[in-house]
Length: 266
Image (cartoon, rainbow, N blue to C red; front, side):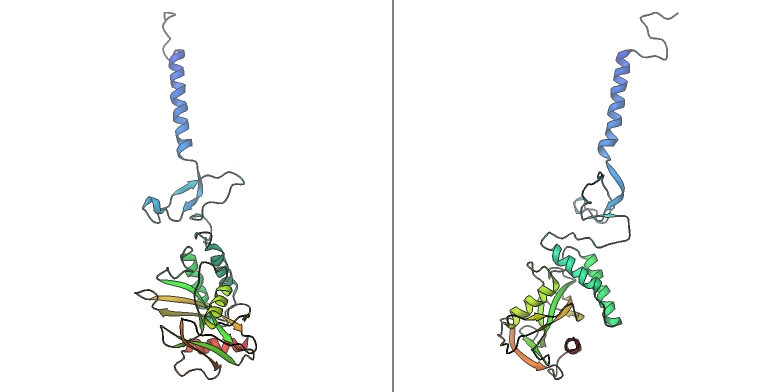
């Protein structure tokens, strides 16, 4: 017979039961604190971990919470994610929208359109800037006179060839068309240029704005100069001159000839 002071086999005293409940509560809390995760969201890349590309579960978010950080991707068909600083985001978004909606005039231009979009998907933070060494988006312009019969070309001070006006995007740019117009205005000295809507051509060409060389993914527009416009040579040009669109300098490359021909058809 069991003594009243001794618990029966298979039972525990109040103190022991209290300690057991405390250990159980601690154990139950640990997983909840360490793993507040939502399956289906992963980091595309976690630079701080030093393991580029290794999937990491992201923290759970309640109903109505903000979307995951831009480096996190939901498990759905891949979409472009803007991970750039806020100053870059408007220009990136505009460039993607312009290229996604643009109707290419032929198969070669369609191939370039898809290549430019792929570049933006792969380089959301720096693909618009010259610091992206492999390639970067640029904007240029065919400047036509008021009659539409002549095009203004620059004798580029570094390349030493006649080219259309244009160049790199800058931090203050918010649209590709705006970047093209800014470059045309700066390089021509002509105010009140009138832009025509949408790109007219895409061109991919090798340049030396990085020591090892890089590619310009150039989105090309058309602007019309006012009647009697007078140009001013900038420090980026050795010269500026008007040329008939059907009589360009002898050493003009095929891309510029195509741009001039497409510009006058607008």
